Each structure stands twice: as structure tokens, then as C-alpha cells.
Length: 114
Length: 111
Image 1 (cartoon, rainbow over the protein chains, first blue to last red):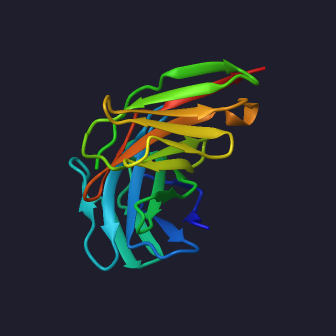
Image 2 (cartoon, rainbow over the protein chains, first blue to last red):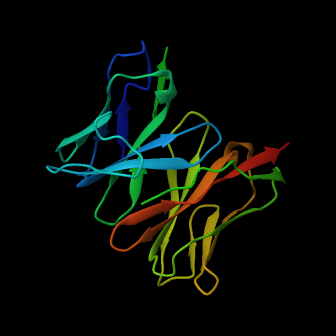
């Protein structure tokens, strides 16, 4: 149980384009989903917390107009990186939280912006 | 919630030995703790958790110890195997819903 999927696992895009990453909880309903970014050899950096049916809460320094988050259902959240630039290249990871507070993580999405 | 972006400390252990990975957490109000394992290119994987009303919890080959007096958490891995090589993160939950990751420790298992 507690499986979280992400799609796509890898994406390469041109600078200036937008990329959408999906996060799904496959076998449980997640009232809260989280989006993280991870740089090589570093810990995860929380970008935003998303509750189903409401606006996401962004961490300080994260541009909400650049990283659009939608949490339309209890099993799906999406992160759209708008007008991507090379500095947005990173490993993006989502997690979904059960009522017991445990966060279960997706496998991550490697974004490369050329 | 917040997380810390730091370069990872490394622990090297011989295959078959026991590993102990330590974590100092930040907030005395934290009431729930989790250890995650992250292999290269993958998302963190849940290993074991413990609530603040306990001081020890055992799983398969893993044990988590919690010392609330000094705000210290440890993960013990018995008979470490090559497949245990990964980065290990502790995480604390500060009520009501702040989730804080530790900086992580890279475990290298030597043959």
C-alpha cells in the first residue's frame, strides 16, 4: 500500500517552454500533497504544500507564478514549470500524506532544460 | 515546513557490520519521526517511523531509537548489506503539520 507515482520520470525541454509533472496516490486518498526539489548531493527542499480543492501554500522564495500547482482531486496533484530555464533543471519529487502524517514519496522526475 | 540543503556526510561500514545513522532534530514539540532511504535517482522510501510516546521501535533489520531529552534520533541497521547503500534522511513532524527533513547521511557499504 501507500504507492505514489509520478509522470514523466524524465523530461527534456527547450528553454521557454512549460512542463507539467503529475503526482498520483495510487491506493489511498491524499488530502495533502507536497512538492520538493532536490539538487545533487543535497537534501530535499520543500517547494509547496497542496491541499485538495484549495490553493497551494508556497515556501519562501518559491515563485508561485512559475511553479503552478493544482490539486484537483484526492489522488492527483500537478506541478507545471512555466517558461522553464536551464536553472530550473532539477529532480522534482512529490509526496502524498495520509491522515497518520506519514509522507510517501513518488519516484521523482528529472527535468532537464536545454 | 522547511528542509536544509547541505552537502551530505558519509558513513562507511563493512558488509555484515551494524550501521548506526544519527540525526539531531530541531524542535522539542515534534511528535512524529520518520526515516527514509533514498537511492540514486529515486524518490525517498519509507523505512520506519516512531511517535514521541515511544523510545524504540524495531522493524526488519532496522531499529529506530528516540532520545527526547537530547532531541536525538538514530537508525540502526543490522548486518548491513550492499543494497543498504543509499542516502538516509530523518524527518520530524512539528504540530500541526510542519514536516522538516534532516540533511541526510550517505551510507556506503564496503565489500
